[in-house]
Length: 199
Ligand code: NI
Image 1 (cartoon, rainbow, N blue to C red):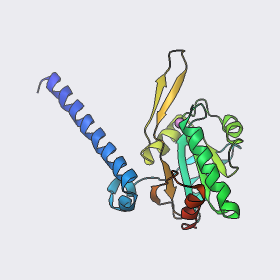
Image 2 (cartoon, protein in one colour; image 1 turned 45 degrees about the horizontal axis):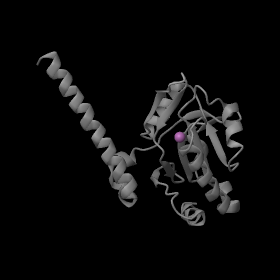
Image 3 (cartoon, rainbow, N blue to C red; image 1 turned 30 degrees about the horizontal axis):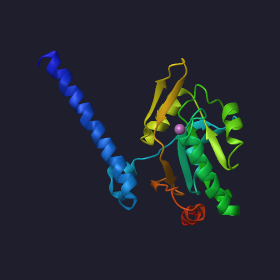
Image 4 (cartoon, rainbow, N blue to C red; image 1 turned 90 degrees about the vertical axis):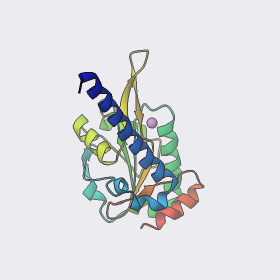
């Protein structure tokens, strides 16, 4: 094969792989009840070792025995992240004392800017249950990969940058197994009642 043909085939393969990923995500979002049947869904999540907003080491094992929600984002996000964190805060508020038995993780996709101190300041606007997690680039890349999270640095005209990222909220059960994307497009009390089922 010529170099050109090889390159075209590689591009085609990358395109098809991308299509497959999109199809899997659409399946997850549209048909959460079939999530367990999607092979990639079973593989979502995994071990991690990160640092929280107080500088404490946090691993997936700290959440054994309690259900938890995981959201990837970054503190400089203009809209999707703060909206999602606000909606999740409303759900945690509705849980009352039960919120103490549910984990809420905000994992940064922008560890270069999101230091523990930065996360602590940012999360002070939301429900106190949130653990804001950061780490070195390799640790963040690994946890993002295990959750099938897309993240990409996008330069801005002013020399700054923003991050494109997957904005799903992942619901994990008390064994750390992925259940389904967590639906926030409903009344917070209904979402809270749904979460209680996994206690
Ligand atoms: Ni965001």
